[in-house]
Length: 84
Image 1: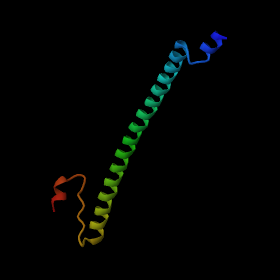
Image 2: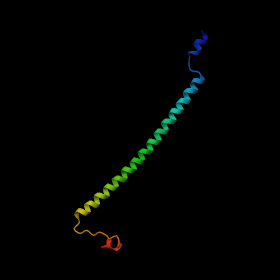
Image 3: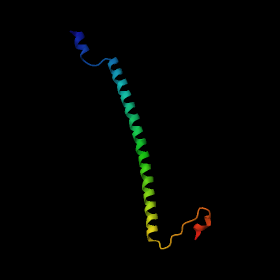
Image 4: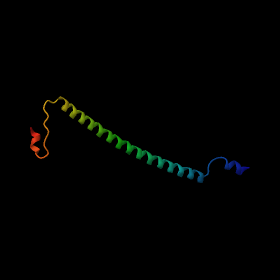
């Protein structure tokens, strides 16, 4: 009777160590996944910023082409032709 009471009063040291080891493994895996997702988010943000800048530049060029009266294009064989 006394041994049953003592056994049911809590967890053994071995059980606590196993629980601690499992918790550490789970937290480590969660940290790895979180780190990778943050890295992917930064890559996506950088890609989106580059696309936004490219769209802005293309829109400005298209607007300039629509509003110009004279279009001078450089010839590939003469770089000085772009200075007109």
